[in-house]
Length: 372
Image: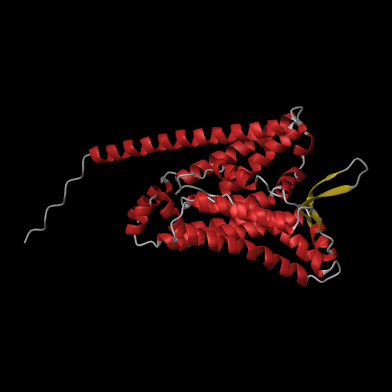
Protein backbone atom coordinates (compact mmCIF):
# COMPACT_ATOMS: atom_id res chain seq x y z
CA UNK A 1 0.00 0.00 0.00
CA UNK A 2 2.86 2.37 0.84
CA UNK A 3 4.42 1.72 -2.57
CA UNK A 4 1.12 2.51 -4.28
CA UNK A 5 0.78 5.81 -2.39
CA UNK A 6 4.36 6.71 -3.25
CA UNK A 7 3.71 5.98 -6.94
CA UNK A 8 0.60 8.14 -6.88
CA UNK A 9 2.53 11.05 -5.34
CA UNK A 10 5.24 10.74 -8.00
CA UNK A 11 2.65 10.86 -10.78
CA UNK A 12 1.06 13.93 -9.21
CA UNK A 13 4.43 15.71 -9.21
CA UNK A 14 5.08 15.07 -12.90
CA UNK A 15 5.76 18.45 -14.57
CA UNK A 16 3.67 19.79 -17.41
CA UNK A 17 4.82 18.96 -20.92
CA UNK A 18 6.07 21.77 -23.17
CA UNK A 19 2.83 21.63 -25.19
CA UNK A 20 0.69 21.88 -22.04
CA UNK A 21 2.75 24.76 -20.66
CA UNK A 22 2.45 26.77 -23.89
CA UNK A 23 -1.27 25.95 -24.09
CA UNK A 24 -1.93 27.29 -20.59
CA UNK A 25 0.03 30.44 -21.41
CA UNK A 26 -2.20 31.02 -24.44
CA UNK A 27 -5.35 30.44 -22.41
CA UNK A 28 -4.12 32.85 -19.72
CA UNK A 29 -3.30 35.57 -22.23
CA UNK A 30 -6.69 35.21 -23.93
CA UNK A 31 -8.47 35.43 -20.57
CA UNK A 32 -6.45 38.51 -19.58
CA UNK A 33 -7.04 40.18 -22.94
CA UNK A 34 -10.78 39.50 -22.87
CA UNK A 35 -11.08 40.71 -19.27
CA UNK A 36 -9.22 43.91 -20.15
CA UNK A 37 -11.64 44.46 -23.06
CA UNK A 38 -14.60 43.94 -20.73
CA UNK A 39 -13.28 46.51 -18.27
CA UNK A 40 -12.23 49.16 -20.80
CA UNK A 41 -14.38 48.84 -23.92
CA UNK A 42 -17.41 47.22 -22.22
CA UNK A 43 -20.19 47.18 -24.83
CA UNK A 44 -20.64 43.73 -26.35
CA UNK A 45 -17.78 42.22 -24.33
CA UNK A 46 -20.02 42.21 -21.27
CA UNK A 47 -22.44 39.80 -22.96
CA UNK A 48 -21.82 36.05 -23.47
CA UNK A 49 -22.96 36.51 -27.07
CA UNK A 50 -19.59 38.13 -27.82
CA UNK A 51 -17.81 34.80 -27.21
CA UNK A 52 -20.28 33.07 -29.52
CA UNK A 53 -19.79 35.77 -32.14
CA UNK A 54 -16.04 35.18 -32.05
CA UNK A 55 -16.68 31.47 -32.62
CA UNK A 56 -19.31 32.08 -35.31
CA UNK A 57 -17.13 34.49 -37.29
CA UNK A 58 -13.95 32.40 -37.01
CA UNK A 59 -15.18 28.80 -37.21
CA UNK A 60 -13.42 28.18 -40.54
CA UNK A 61 -10.19 29.70 -39.17
CA UNK A 62 -10.32 27.41 -36.14
CA UNK A 63 -10.71 24.34 -38.37
CA UNK A 64 -7.82 25.16 -40.73
CA UNK A 65 -5.67 26.19 -37.76
CA UNK A 66 -6.22 22.68 -36.38
CA UNK A 67 -5.24 21.25 -39.76
CA UNK A 68 -2.03 23.31 -39.67
CA UNK A 69 -1.33 22.22 -36.11
CA UNK A 70 -1.42 18.53 -37.07
CA UNK A 71 0.97 19.05 -39.98
CA UNK A 72 3.31 21.30 -37.98
CA UNK A 73 3.48 18.85 -35.08
CA UNK A 74 4.76 16.33 -37.62
CA UNK A 75 7.46 18.78 -38.72
CA UNK A 76 5.75 19.92 -41.95
CA UNK A 77 3.84 22.91 -43.24
CA UNK A 78 0.78 23.41 -45.43
CA UNK A 79 0.23 26.83 -46.99
CA UNK A 80 -2.41 25.64 -49.45
CA UNK A 81 -5.28 25.61 -46.93
CA UNK A 82 -6.53 29.10 -47.82
CA UNK A 83 -6.56 28.25 -51.53
CA UNK A 84 -8.42 25.00 -50.86
CA UNK A 85 -11.04 26.91 -48.88
CA UNK A 86 -11.51 29.37 -51.75
CA UNK A 87 -11.84 26.57 -54.30
CA UNK A 88 -14.26 24.66 -52.07
CA UNK A 89 -16.48 27.68 -51.47
CA UNK A 90 -16.66 28.56 -55.16
CA UNK A 91 -17.28 24.95 -56.26
CA UNK A 92 -20.00 24.40 -53.66
CA UNK A 93 -21.73 27.70 -54.44
CA UNK A 94 -21.82 26.91 -58.17
CA UNK A 95 -23.01 23.36 -57.51
CA UNK A 96 -25.85 24.49 -55.24
CA UNK A 97 -27.06 26.99 -57.84
CA UNK A 98 -26.73 24.39 -60.60
CA UNK A 99 -28.96 21.80 -58.92
CA UNK A 100 -31.77 24.35 -58.56
CA UNK A 101 -32.94 26.69 -55.85
CA UNK A 102 -35.82 24.44 -54.78
CA UNK A 103 -33.99 21.10 -54.61
CA UNK A 104 -34.07 18.99 -51.44
CA UNK A 105 -31.60 18.61 -48.59
CA UNK A 106 -30.01 15.72 -50.50
CA UNK A 107 -28.22 18.29 -52.63
CA UNK A 108 -26.74 19.80 -49.44
CA UNK A 109 -25.35 16.38 -48.53
CA UNK A 110 -23.84 16.07 -52.00
CA UNK A 111 -22.35 19.54 -51.62
CA UNK A 112 -20.82 18.53 -48.30
CA UNK A 113 -19.29 15.44 -49.92
CA UNK A 114 -17.99 17.63 -52.74
CA UNK A 115 -16.25 19.88 -50.21
CA UNK A 116 -14.67 16.92 -48.45
CA UNK A 117 -13.68 15.42 -51.82
CA UNK A 118 -11.83 18.56 -52.88
CA UNK A 119 -9.95 18.69 -49.59
CA UNK A 120 -9.22 14.97 -49.70
CA UNK A 121 -7.85 15.24 -53.25
CA UNK A 122 -5.39 17.96 -52.26
CA UNK A 123 -4.46 16.07 -49.08
CA UNK A 124 -3.76 12.80 -50.90
CA UNK A 125 -1.70 14.45 -53.65
CA UNK A 126 0.33 16.70 -51.36
CA UNK A 127 0.79 13.97 -48.76
CA UNK A 128 2.15 11.57 -51.38
CA UNK A 129 4.57 14.14 -52.79
CA UNK A 130 5.85 15.17 -49.36
CA UNK A 131 6.06 11.79 -47.66
CA UNK A 132 6.89 9.24 -50.36
CA UNK A 133 8.69 11.40 -52.94
CA UNK A 134 10.29 13.49 -50.15
CA UNK A 135 9.74 16.86 -51.83
CA UNK A 136 9.98 19.89 -49.57
CA UNK A 137 6.51 20.54 -48.05
CA UNK A 138 6.76 24.29 -48.54
CA UNK A 139 7.28 23.86 -52.29
CA UNK A 140 4.54 21.24 -52.62
CA UNK A 141 1.92 23.21 -50.72
CA UNK A 142 2.93 26.48 -52.41
CA UNK A 143 2.19 24.79 -55.73
CA UNK A 144 -1.08 23.51 -54.23
CA UNK A 145 -2.03 27.04 -53.20
CA UNK A 146 -1.41 28.39 -56.73
CA UNK A 147 -3.31 25.46 -58.25
CA UNK A 148 -6.32 26.00 -56.00
CA UNK A 149 -6.39 29.75 -56.63
CA UNK A 150 -6.09 29.21 -60.37
CA UNK A 151 -8.91 26.67 -60.45
CA UNK A 152 -11.09 29.04 -58.42
CA UNK A 153 -10.57 31.81 -60.98
CA UNK A 154 -11.31 29.40 -63.85
CA UNK A 155 -14.62 28.47 -62.24
CA UNK A 156 -15.69 32.12 -61.95
CA UNK A 157 -14.04 35.51 -61.76
CA UNK A 158 -17.24 37.07 -60.46
CA UNK A 159 -18.83 36.58 -57.03
CA UNK A 160 -21.40 33.78 -56.90
CA UNK A 161 -24.23 34.19 -54.41
CA UNK A 162 -25.95 31.00 -53.26
CA UNK A 163 -29.64 30.89 -54.21
CA UNK A 164 -30.40 27.40 -52.86
CA UNK A 165 -33.40 27.79 -50.52
CA UNK A 166 -32.73 24.75 -48.33
CA UNK A 167 -29.09 25.72 -47.87
CA UNK A 168 -30.02 29.29 -47.00
CA UNK A 169 -32.45 27.91 -44.43
CA UNK A 170 -29.58 25.86 -42.97
CA UNK A 171 -27.43 29.00 -42.85
CA UNK A 172 -30.09 30.78 -40.79
CA UNK A 173 -30.41 27.86 -38.36
CA UNK A 174 -28.79 28.67 -35.02
CA UNK A 175 -28.76 27.06 -31.61
CA UNK A 176 -30.45 29.40 -29.11
CA UNK A 177 -29.40 29.45 -25.45
CA UNK A 178 -31.93 31.48 -23.49
CA UNK A 179 -30.16 31.50 -20.11
CA UNK A 180 -27.06 33.11 -21.67
CA UNK A 181 -29.09 35.82 -23.36
CA UNK A 182 -29.87 39.35 -22.22
CA UNK A 183 -32.90 41.59 -21.86
CA UNK A 184 -33.23 44.36 -24.42
CA UNK A 185 -34.39 47.88 -23.56
CA UNK A 186 -37.90 47.03 -24.69
CA UNK A 187 -38.01 44.16 -22.20
CA UNK A 188 -37.68 41.32 -24.74
CA UNK A 189 -35.31 38.45 -24.04
CA UNK A 190 -32.57 38.14 -26.66
CA UNK A 191 -31.14 34.60 -26.43
CA UNK A 192 -27.50 33.82 -27.16
CA UNK A 193 -27.09 32.24 -30.60
CA UNK A 194 -24.39 29.93 -31.93
CA UNK A 195 -24.15 28.84 -35.55
CA UNK A 196 -23.85 25.26 -36.76
CA UNK A 197 -20.39 26.04 -38.13
CA UNK A 198 -19.13 27.04 -34.68
CA UNK A 199 -20.43 23.77 -33.22
CA UNK A 200 -18.64 21.88 -36.00
CA UNK A 201 -15.42 23.77 -35.23
CA UNK A 202 -15.58 22.85 -31.54
CA UNK A 203 -16.28 19.22 -32.48
CA UNK A 204 -13.21 19.23 -34.76
CA UNK A 205 -11.03 20.54 -31.93
CA UNK A 206 -12.27 17.79 -29.60
CA UNK A 207 -11.84 15.02 -32.18
CA UNK A 208 -8.36 16.15 -33.21
CA UNK A 209 -7.32 16.41 -29.55
CA UNK A 210 -8.47 12.84 -28.92
CA UNK A 211 -6.78 11.64 -32.10
CA UNK A 212 -3.43 13.22 -31.26
CA UNK A 213 -3.46 12.15 -27.63
CA UNK A 214 -4.97 8.67 -27.64
CA UNK A 215 -4.40 7.07 -31.05
CA UNK A 216 -1.32 5.39 -32.49
CA UNK A 217 -1.33 7.80 -35.44
CA UNK A 218 -1.37 10.83 -33.13
CA UNK A 219 1.54 9.55 -31.05
CA UNK A 220 3.43 8.71 -34.23
CA UNK A 221 2.97 12.27 -35.56
CA UNK A 222 4.41 13.69 -32.32
CA UNK A 223 7.33 11.26 -32.47
CA UNK A 224 8.11 12.04 -36.12
CA UNK A 225 8.02 15.79 -35.48
CA UNK A 226 10.18 15.48 -32.36
CA UNK A 227 12.97 13.42 -33.94
CA UNK A 228 12.49 11.60 -37.21
CA UNK A 229 15.56 9.40 -36.78
CA UNK A 230 14.48 8.30 -33.32
CA UNK A 231 11.00 7.56 -34.65
CA UNK A 232 12.53 5.28 -37.29
CA UNK A 233 14.55 3.47 -34.63
CA UNK A 234 11.36 2.93 -32.63
CA UNK A 235 9.78 1.19 -35.61
CA UNK A 236 7.38 4.00 -36.56
CA UNK A 237 6.44 4.23 -40.23
CA UNK A 238 7.55 7.83 -40.72
CA UNK A 239 6.36 8.21 -44.31
CA UNK A 240 2.91 6.85 -43.54
CA UNK A 241 2.54 9.15 -40.51
CA UNK A 242 3.47 12.22 -42.56
CA UNK A 243 1.18 11.12 -45.39
CA UNK A 244 -1.86 10.81 -43.09
CA UNK A 245 -1.15 14.16 -41.44
CA UNK A 246 -1.51 15.83 -44.85
CA UNK A 247 -4.61 13.79 -45.69
CA UNK A 248 -6.26 14.94 -42.45
CA UNK A 249 -5.16 18.50 -43.14
CA UNK A 250 -6.73 18.38 -46.59
CA UNK A 251 -10.01 16.96 -45.27
CA UNK A 252 -10.21 19.66 -42.63
CA UNK A 253 -9.51 22.32 -45.28
CA UNK A 254 -12.47 21.07 -47.34
CA UNK A 255 -14.63 21.01 -44.23
CA UNK A 256 -13.54 24.56 -43.40
CA UNK A 257 -14.62 25.66 -46.87
CA UNK A 258 -18.11 24.23 -46.33
CA UNK A 259 -18.31 25.88 -42.89
CA UNK A 260 -17.20 29.19 -44.40
CA UNK A 261 -19.97 28.92 -47.00
CA UNK A 262 -22.49 28.28 -44.21
CA UNK A 263 -21.40 31.53 -42.57
CA UNK A 264 -21.20 33.61 -45.75
CA UNK A 265 -23.21 31.91 -48.53
CA UNK A 266 -21.31 33.32 -51.49
CA UNK A 267 -18.29 32.29 -53.52
CA UNK A 268 -15.53 34.72 -54.41
CA UNK A 269 -12.05 34.40 -55.90
CA UNK A 270 -10.64 36.31 -52.92
CA UNK A 271 -12.16 34.07 -50.20
CA UNK A 272 -9.66 33.20 -47.45
CA UNK A 273 -6.89 34.97 -49.36
CA UNK A 274 -4.69 35.08 -46.24
CA UNK A 275 -6.28 32.11 -44.54
CA UNK A 276 -3.06 30.10 -44.42
CA UNK A 277 -1.17 32.94 -42.76
CA UNK A 278 -3.85 33.47 -40.13
CA UNK A 279 -3.99 29.71 -39.50
CA UNK A 280 -0.21 29.49 -39.03
CA UNK A 281 -0.31 32.48 -36.68
CA UNK A 282 -3.16 30.96 -34.64
CA UNK A 283 -1.30 27.66 -34.39
CA UNK A 284 1.96 29.28 -33.25
CA UNK A 285 0.19 31.55 -30.77
CA UNK A 286 -1.56 28.44 -29.44
CA UNK A 287 1.80 26.84 -28.65
CA UNK A 288 2.75 24.84 -31.76
CA UNK A 289 6.42 24.91 -32.70
CA UNK A 290 7.48 25.25 -36.33
CA UNK A 291 10.27 22.78 -35.61
CA UNK A 292 7.71 20.06 -34.84
CA UNK A 293 7.00 17.70 -31.97
CA UNK A 294 5.19 20.25 -29.77
CA UNK A 295 1.62 21.44 -30.14
CA UNK A 296 -1.94 21.12 -28.91
CA UNK A 297 -5.20 21.83 -30.75
CA UNK A 298 -6.78 23.20 -27.56
CA UNK A 299 -4.08 25.86 -27.56
CA UNK A 300 -4.72 26.41 -31.27
CA UNK A 301 -8.38 27.15 -30.50
CA UNK A 302 -7.35 29.87 -28.06
CA UNK A 303 -4.71 31.12 -30.51
CA UNK A 304 -7.48 31.72 -33.05
CA UNK A 305 -9.61 33.36 -30.35
CA UNK A 306 -6.73 35.68 -29.45
CA UNK A 307 -6.47 36.85 -33.08
CA UNK A 308 -10.25 37.28 -33.25
CA UNK A 309 -10.28 39.26 -29.99
CA UNK A 310 -7.51 41.56 -31.24
CA UNK A 311 -9.52 42.20 -34.39
CA UNK A 312 -12.65 42.99 -32.36
CA UNK A 313 -10.80 45.28 -29.97
CA UNK A 314 -9.23 47.26 -32.81
CA UNK A 315 -12.60 47.53 -34.59
CA UNK A 316 -14.15 49.07 -31.46
CA UNK A 317 -11.21 51.40 -30.78
CA UNK A 318 -10.27 54.67 -32.55
CA UNK A 319 -7.41 52.77 -34.24
CA UNK A 320 -9.75 50.85 -36.55
CA UNK A 321 -7.72 51.14 -39.76
CA UNK A 322 -6.74 47.86 -41.43
CA UNK A 323 -2.99 48.35 -40.97
CA UNK A 324 -3.38 48.45 -37.18
CA UNK A 325 -4.86 44.96 -37.39
CA UNK A 326 -1.85 43.75 -39.38
CA UNK A 327 0.59 45.40 -36.97
CA UNK A 328 -1.17 43.95 -33.93
CA UNK A 329 -1.18 40.44 -35.39
CA UNK A 330 2.50 40.71 -36.27
CA UNK A 331 3.40 42.01 -32.82
CA UNK A 332 1.43 39.25 -31.11
CA UNK A 333 3.01 36.57 -33.29
CA UNK A 334 6.52 37.90 -32.62
CA UNK A 335 5.77 38.08 -28.89
CA UNK A 336 4.67 34.44 -28.78
CA UNK A 337 7.69 33.23 -30.77
CA UNK A 338 10.02 34.96 -28.31
CA UNK A 339 7.95 33.70 -25.37
CA UNK A 340 8.13 30.13 -26.65
CA UNK A 341 11.90 30.37 -27.00
CA UNK A 342 12.35 31.77 -23.49
CA UNK A 343 9.98 29.29 -21.82
CA UNK A 344 11.37 26.23 -23.57
CA UNK A 345 14.98 27.29 -22.93
CA UNK A 346 14.24 27.78 -19.24
CA UNK A 347 12.49 24.42 -18.99
CA UNK A 348 15.36 22.72 -20.81
CA UNK A 349 17.89 24.18 -18.37
CA UNK A 350 15.69 23.15 -15.47
CA UNK A 351 15.50 19.57 -16.72
CA UNK A 352 19.27 19.46 -17.21
CA UNK A 353 19.91 20.69 -13.64
CA UNK A 354 17.41 18.18 -12.25
CA UNK A 355 19.13 15.30 -14.04
CA UNK A 356 22.51 16.50 -12.78
CA UNK A 357 21.25 16.56 -9.17
CA UNK A 358 19.75 13.09 -9.55
CA UNK A 359 23.04 11.71 -10.84
CA UNK A 360 25.01 13.40 -8.06
CA UNK A 361 22.66 12.17 -5.31
CA UNK A 362 24.07 9.26 -3.21
CA UNK A 363 22.64 5.94 -4.20
CA UNK A 364 21.21 3.63 -1.52
CA UNK A 365 23.46 0.66 -0.68
CA UNK A 366 22.62 -2.60 -2.37
CA UNK A 367 21.16 -5.34 -0.26
CA UNK A 368 23.74 -8.04 0.64
CA UNK A 369 23.20 -11.39 -1.05
CA UNK A 370 21.33 -13.91 1.07
CA UNK A 371 23.56 -16.29 3.02
CA UNK A 372 23.63 -19.93 2.09
